[in-house]
Image (cartoon, rainbow, N blue to C red; front, top):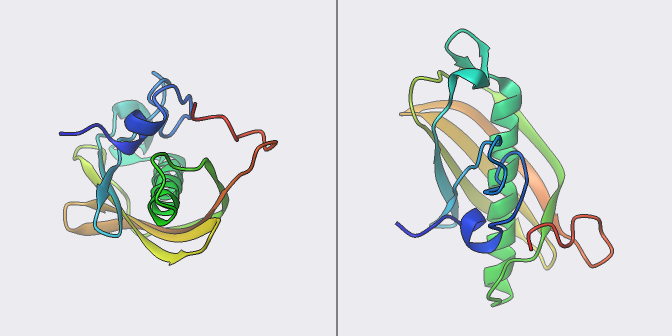
Length: 154
């Protein structure tokens, strides 16, 4: 399988959620899929909020980072570029729909809801098998030179 977008475009990123270079981070590995991305996350025991269940903060981080990369890839494709612009989260919200177990791989999916020149609205979902555990929506924007995050992926 081809490396995920984080490893392909930002191998030195230290982001806690998606940075391949952060060995203590979550290191999500998202892949292009239809009108968005998909990833599989394997929770660890230290990701628990209470016995056997994933921490809501971890869930939020997973959805945030996955949504951000969905936006970056959509903007890259729209502009017909070879690399994505650096994007950051402008806003996001999540709904924790049920306790999320840590004993199974979790599927994270996203799709683009609205694509403008420099921002993307994204829908994100986290499933345990066929059960929807969390969903969210975010607005992610491309930053320009001078923004503190501008070179974070290089």
